[in-house]
Amino acid sequence: MKKLEKLQNVITAMITPFNEDFSIDEEKYREFIRFQIDNGCQPLTMGTTGESATLSHKEHHYAIEITVDEAKKSGKDPFVLAGTGSNSTQESISLSQYAEKAGADGCLVVVPYYNKPVQHSLIDHFSAIADSISLPIILYNVPSRTGRNLEPETVSKLAYKNDNIVGIKCASGNIDQITKIVKTTPEDFIVLSGDDGMTFHIMALGGKGVVSVAANIIPAKLVEFTNTMLKGNWEKAKEKQFELYDLFKVLFIETNPGPVKYAAELMGIMNKRMRLPLTPPLVDNQEKVKIVLKNLNLI
View 1 (cartoon, rainbow, N blue to C red):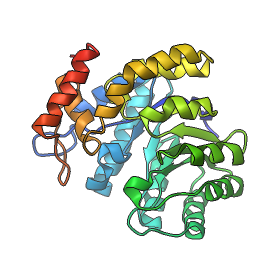
View 2: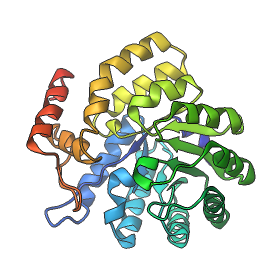
View 3: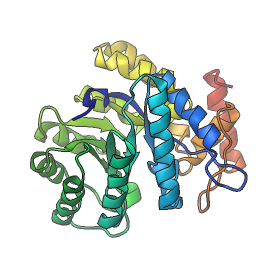
């Protein structure tokens, strides 16, 4: 499969810039994609941090096309990961097939939300998507937002059953569960942190990197952080973990991506506009974000 070795270090769960009418701001989006690639990150377009749940399929396709185009122009051959998950298997298949047609390098597929399928149903769901495309698939487990946990035994069965299910983004917050996933999946199965604050712990277990929210605003710092761990410099990595800890926490002081979009606006990266039902952080929480950014000399 294409470029799988690039699925390490930092994959940025990219935020989506909006115009005043809340349409996608293509010019700003292209600029932001270049910012990520130039700082050594692999771009993830239309993940949940990109507010994919509030975008139409047409807009979803548009964002994937923009990302693939900018990646090609960069000359750096990044791995373009497209978020193609849905609570409808058929919709996820359609989005995944479109991503493959558009030139993406892989798909990130979240556990179906709201439906709460049982584990054997999840095997059928993810296997149907895997069978519909030739692209590599990264599973995404975030039970706090989907209402259903993808159990380690299920992950292992999917990894051995489907050649193109190659990894998982872990955002369960359960280190025991993540340990079991690393232990029971194939040696080349790619385990990624889905939570910036857990990256140190997951990479210590053998994880390869992080699908990062914080990288939206500090991509180079995140790449430096993960590189120290891939090189085995755990003392330096621990220092970085403590240095960035407050930022990792404050970016989830309200529902993601509200705080990181507000931080991006303070740093001049893009505006904080969000599509309802999500809104920018309350004033008190904005102040908390400002304090952390000032302490890190980011504003």
